[in-house]
Length: 400
Image (cartoon, rainbow, N blue to C red; front, side, top):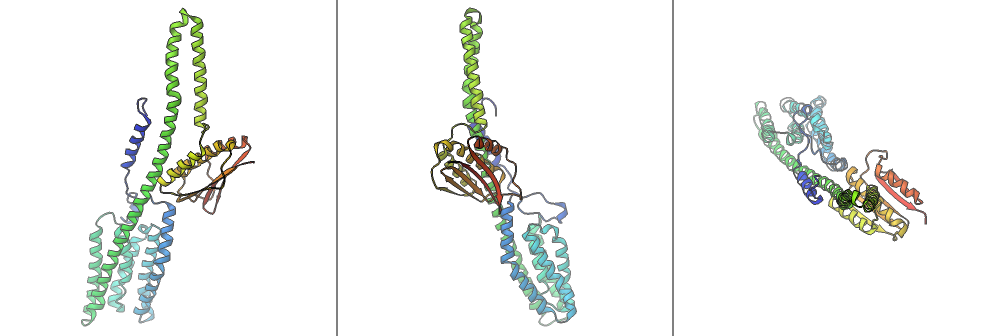
């Protein structure tokens, strides 16, 4: 920020910068056969929730369909060696798709199931052997970085053409079972896959928007800090400049007056250093009620559900430090966590902030809270940070 640039101008400049952040996922991975990975900016928590939802709702019907395909089309024991690889490839593709990793298995799954369909048509007489290629390819095709619609058309055409070869063996009655039904159902499956992919695009956009709001919330806090720092030092430096110029003029004409000016300069600088330290360590007087409202607004702006419970009002002796703990914890959640819910509980002698965005199994080192822990201890309290069952808990308690 240049000396002439106001904090509000900096905030607008930063906001404009974030407005041009790309909403796309990560670049194509050369090891994934041209299939792009989804949603770099979907959080691990959201990805896990979507994976569990898909496995719980879609996997059982898929398993049932796989069993039915094999049971209905297997007319001899050795037919299983042809039919099972196709349905297995489809199930593996689906499992990897729920983990956002279909690019790793897309090519082998499609190739295996593509071989099963002509073998089913010409060797085992299995009209449902197309199920594997239709399922595996419909999961992979919408993830292609280019030529997706051409690939979808090629898939439908492949199912139709291979099915039509059954007419060479069975001229009568094969059109419906091996051509029309497989082609129609494959078309429905691929269309449904494109619609489902659009759902994930919307989820990605919502996640990006949430992340951007969190980043901007932190930026606004930094701009607020810059404004406070400007208020503290700007006026003092201007006065020091004027008094130094005055002392320079008086140093020979009126030495006593010049000495008084220099003493005032020293006092001003000392007071400014003290205020700057207080600002840097968050020791300026804070209004706890205002900090609670500010934290609520910041979390809601970032798309995080927040619940504030006031069991009692904090005492005058502890409210300022509790406000500092709340401010520092709010900043840490917005910057480091992937929270979707935050609970703030205020008691007469303490505050507890719980969020569900904990990462890993160990408590991270947070420098700001470490500094506050010493200050809380000096005032007869205790600041604790813990991790339990995926929740990060920050609690500050003072003896009554």
